[in-house]
Image 1: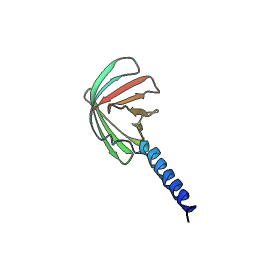
Image 2: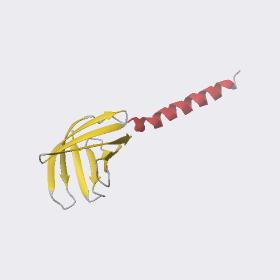
Image 3: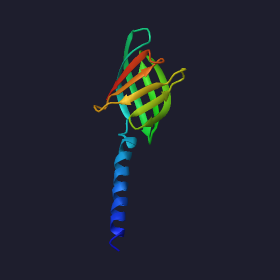
Length: 116
């Protein structure tokens, strides 16, 4: 009977380690309204607001920039978000420890920062 005890401990240790490793995939929900600051592919800057709805890794976004509205949807895997918004290349964001989202669009020629 004592030989079964180390096996149970090993299994419990393994499950605990697996749970700790799985934590980043369930990153903090990013739903909310953000202030947007960005740079277009031509180098000009812009500001606006972005509303994000995050439902278990499925992300819906609504941008309001310079009197125009844009919408997109995508997915979140941990702290990385991909959003298709009707252009050839998606917007790709990374959630920073501060809660800001730092992104690139326009095939990497444009940048955007979303501030909660």
